[in-house]
Image (cartoon, rainbow, N blue to C red):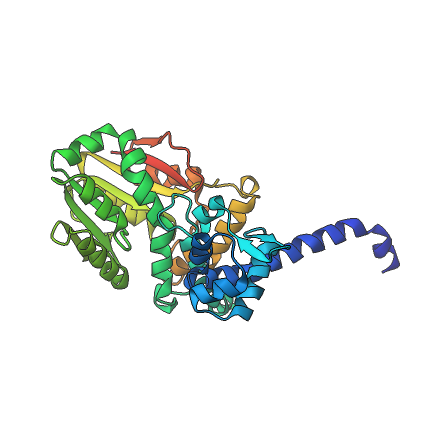
Length: 357
């Protein structure tokens, strides 16, 4: 034991302790950001300008004492600026784009809302560590699906029509002519709604195996005035109808799927001979050594708590969120596709692949 103590680098131990302390603090702060998002405190603070805790309490109708402690945590984290002389708190406009505005292309609200549902499922995931299998979607709180919808909504609002589809002119031409579009694993239907809105002549479909998400999808389509334009159905997407669609998309779906091989073969069969499949996945590497960074930390964690375990719950492949381009190419080739192109889109979170038969 004495020799071991002599060999240890105590400075490295202290440095690592500080790293772990920082991560623990980030986890605890996550709970408070969840509260700030759910109660609208971030939004109220962004609208108020420089404000005291008492004035913010009056504005929100919330407890001043809790707000003061919450504001202290946000100040310590650098989310909020504090003027000690005036005892006021203010959110920089740039931070509001991330924390307080769902319409912002940089909105983190969906990921913040995801924190508590994901952490709350950890004890059930822990059982899978011991017994194998996984946690099915039915075990997750209903808030999970709202959080997922919010986390991807900005991409559909700001990127899909304006930047992503124009990199595939043949898709835009087909949809303008009245072609058919299918979003596989459509979730809350935001992508289908965006496409139906942008291409009035297109025939738009959204298929998913999760009935609760499709209820949200139908409500979103109705709210957009597109209730009759989009056909949402509960479908086993490994058994799609053959040769019916000009354009098929999956957004963060393949890495979650129970049987990705069958899914991609089904998508290939469902495309018309000159059709296009757009696969959107997380912008990470297939190799762990390339993902040793904050993005990798977040995605491996989310994958363990949701993506991988929901697939393994049904005896699935359990690929996980960090599938990467190499795995995507492997799956696409195995399904019989011949054309694979990574689209020239620079995005922090998404990698886009154009796939054709």
